[in-house]
Length: 341
Image (cartoon, rainbow, N blue to C red; front, side):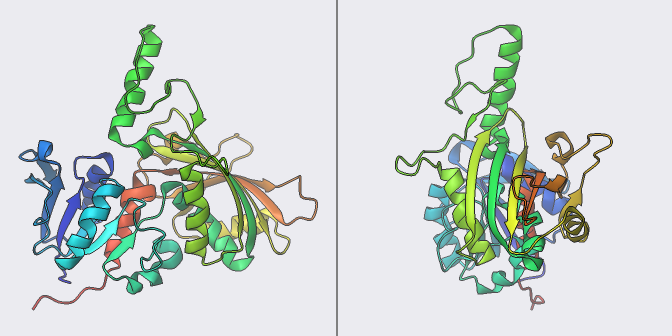
């Protein structure tokens, strides 16, 4: 791969696509040429990249000639169709959909946790679910020192996880609610303004768990390479634009204290402690939005566990950044490079 790779963004007009561009620029990611790919209705429009207008091209099977890295964020069906084509054309794909995450031949990577798995790729590397990333970045350094055997997670997920259209619908429905106007939802099938509801993915009729919850369970076990971790998850959508929050209680094999957790997390990559009891100031989506770290606070003993093995905490992270675009660009930064001939 060239030190100045040709990079294609599939789904460039979406919320994550825009963050791919902004994140590469912010991190000075070297790009020889950018190919902006989207559906036919966006072809001919332009996106700005480092002061230049890049023409958006229609995504076709011929789009990946000469491409070194392809960043996908256009949904699972698009990834399943076009990612293998991109690989055959010589590109390495970093895919933000769920299409390949549980494929045993595809590395599922959070660079702060398992960057070494990148070298195992066969053309495709999967970006984990945003809720999984938000929880696992702070849990991993604890798990390394004192194995976590059980975790209970409750999510408070932003509109951005459902895309730019959902973010806009939240804004429009909120305006309508404040003005006393009726509003018919088109993207999210439930009233969104001033409302909280179960994550809008399909419910398994047998288990009662929705797809988002199942993803967190399966992906955690794959990333931690530990099939024995007991995981309970409840995923909920809240009227926040772009940062997820999660309440996490975890149980370790050995006793663990609040001070131990703070000491571990104070040195952890991608984590920032926001834990001011005196001021009642803890992680909030308004602070997490637009920045790279997972914010961690409310670190306290789980009083329901007198054995001292359990800790409760609250976390927040930008769904479009660490939950999606930032994690993918971090993966791309770690791809092996060679000098141009």
